Amino acid sequence: MMLPNTNEARATLRVILLLAWPTMLEQIMQSAVQYIDTAMVGALGTQATAAVGTTTTIGWLVQSSITAFSIGFLSFISKSCGAGDQRAARRAAAQAVLAALVIGGLCTVLTVSLSRSIPVWMQAEPQIRPLASRYFFILYLPMLFRTAGILLGTVLRAAGDTKTPMKAGLLVNCINVTLNFLLIYPTRKVSLLGCALTLPGAGWGVEGAAAASAIAYTWGGAQIAWALWRHPVISPRGQSLKPDWDILRPCLRVAFPSMLQRFVSSLGYVAFASMINSLGEAATAAHTIANTVESAFYIPGYGMQTAAATLTGNAYGAQDQKRMKSLTNMFLPVEVGLMCLTGGLLFASAPQLMGIFSHSQEVISLGATVLRMVAVSEPLYGVSIIVEGIMMGVGRTRAPFLYNITGMWCVRVLGTYLCTQMLGLGLAAAWGCMIAHNLLLFALYLASYLSGRWNPLRSL
View 1: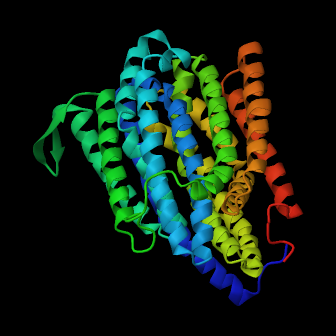
View 2: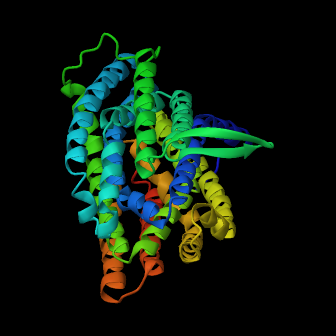
């Protein structure tokens, strides 16, 4: 792999970071709010944390499927913008609005109607099932707006506008945190700078956390939709909202393998979490908190993935092989360097981070152990993240589908079943299977990248 010369490398790195930093900041804020949410709920006790964590993977299943569908629009719009075809990009934006309405409506019906059954399917302990059900119902009631935020935010990023979704995300997070303080806890007195203050509160507990998030997501989805409507380049104004198969067909060709991958992988996460839930309340709480902590340390990886998908899609649309090569050769070393830094920080601070969210020494110790295990594998997983982004940008989604499904079901789920259900091992063994899955992805994605099979312009 040949790196570009110094001046070209600097210019390429500048372009990458200009596109990536708003997405990274948006995700940092999301993780900060997730930390605050988890800490606030954790203050209510281990049972409250377990009730929230019980349905988390179902949320991933829903959200990741919608995100995967958006990959088709990302590929089409970034390619159209690279080719200078604004009319095609605007038509695709209108079809994304149609998709948000249809998918959002369907997801609302499914999540709300299944809210009582999901904690049972997830093997939650009987005493926390009613609370987990109410939390899930409230949180996923505004699925139309959440879907709009995901799909239409991707449309904006595909056109190179990562700042608007970032600003919307910041506002969503501020609303969420403010409402958490008002809805989770009862009215209480606090001391600030020697002054006694009375803070109003609804005292809704876990349901208050769900309501705060639901209101924030509703505002965020509406704001993203309004921003797209007013966008000077890809606004869907004046475009038909009837199905346009000249747009939808190529989008679906890219999106369908990604959707199937995310859906089946997310089912694997559900199976994985269900087996962890069966290990008891402490293991469920430790797993929930560790997932929250870990997510913040993947921010550089997924921020760079968005930039990789958009920029390689632009280069593909312009049929610029030289720029494609320059970009992709720069992404990997930058990504690995960032993930080495975050992995080291996670390893060093794991016990302290767990202590933010729980006062249980059993939960803290168990969570710190699994976090340090996964921290070692982060740089290798970063390679998988960035190569997947590059492949998404050029519309190559079949290989990622095969890689992820094989790793999820043959390594993570089967391995966890053998370790926890048959051998009687605990949470550390389950996370060991997750790490083995990540290592397999690293090997497969690296081999695909080095072979050049992902690059549709390699013959130019």
